[in-house]
Length: 365
Image (cartoon, rainbow, N blue to C red):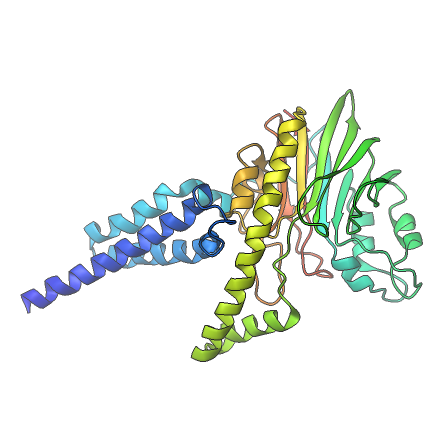
C-alpha cells in the first residue's frame, strides 16, 4: 500500500507539473510563436483563462488537504505569469468623473448598426452614440443603407451632428476600406490608409489637432476569424451537449479557421507596428476590433510600443464579443506612453451588436 501511495503521489505531481507548464506556455507563447509559421500553436493564448482556473483550483485543493509541497507548484505557475494575468483580468479603481483636459474616446464594432435595424424609426446604436458624450468615436463594420427602412447617411448625420470632423471613406487613390469610420470633435488634419496585405479588413490613420499638439489615431478592424453562423451554432452545441463525435469534429473545424485567421492577422499587426515606427508621434492611440485576445501575437507586438488602456484602468474580464458563447475581450484601446488612460470600460448596457463598445478617458501625461 505504501508503494501505491507513492505512485499515486507521483502521478498527481506530474499532472500538476504539466498543468503549470501548460499555463506558462500559454502565457508566454505570443513572445516566441510566430502565427505565420505555427498558426495552430499561436492559438495557445485562448487556453490561458482555463489553465489559470485549473492551476488555482489545484492550489486550493492542495491547501485544503495540507499538501503544501504540491500547492507551491500551481502557485508558482500563476505568480510567474502575473503580468499576463493582470492584462487578462485587471482590477483597477473606477473613476466616474471625466478628468480635466482629457478626451473620451469610444470604439465600437456596430455590426452594421445592429444589421441596420430601426425600431419605430430609431436605431439603438445611433442613440447610444449620440448620448455617449465621446470626443472621438471610432466605428468598425460601419455600413450605410440606401433604404429608408434601415440606417441611412441622413440618420447618421442627424444623430452625430455634434461631430463636425468625420472620415468614412478611403482617400482617393487608395484601396477602398468601407467598414471603418471616425467621428471627431477635434479637427481632422490628415487621413490615410495603413498598408496591409488583406484588402477587406484593415486600418485607417488619422491626424487630429489636439490643442497645440497632433494626435495620431489609428482605427482598425483586423482579420476576422471567418466563423459562419453554422460554425457558431456548432460551437454552442459543443459547449451545451458535450457529445464526443460532435466535439471532435467541431474542434477540428474551429481550430483550423482560427489558425488560418491568426496567420493572416500577424502580418497586419506587423504592418501597424511598422507604421508606428515610421510615424513617431508623441501622442498615439490605436483602437478597434483586433479579433484577438489579450494573450495573442497581435496584442503582444502592439503593446511593446503602446499601453493597453483596459489593463491600465479597467476592471474584470471586459468581455467585448458576447454572442454564441464566444466570450472574449477582442476590442481594444491602446495609448502611447505619453498618454494616461482612465476608467476604460467595456459597456455591456447595449447589446444591439455582437460586440460591446469600449471607451476610455485619455489625458496627456
